[in-house]
Image (tube, rainbow, N blue to C red; front, top):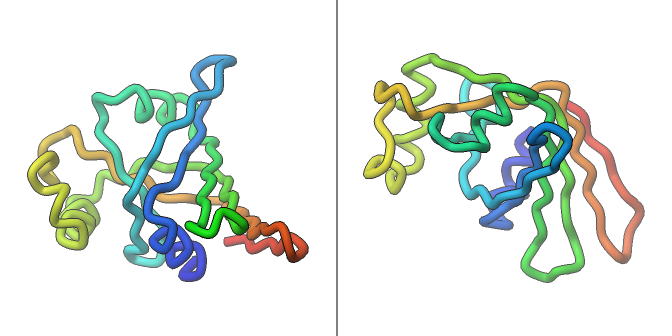
Length: 132
């Protein structure tokens, strides 16, 4: 899990795919954290992406290193966590989000990943898989 978080942070932006009925949707995300032994991402509950995640928690993330020759695909299931202390910790680690979200605003959604499989890929090495 630590390796996956480090990879996401190194890449900066990463792209998450969700399902909107039978239509895939992809968008950029930029924050992730490990809190209390869980890997989290966050978004706003008013966004379509959250509504898609709430309806179907299955997702896939693709994060590409700046070299363009290494990437990670991360799949699993997202679970919403309404724990106030987790939301506060997420905001404390990502100060820039405090202008858009409040831990108790009923919009901030922190979601942790379960049943995760990370696939580390490159053009020059075989795929390596990590589960958590």
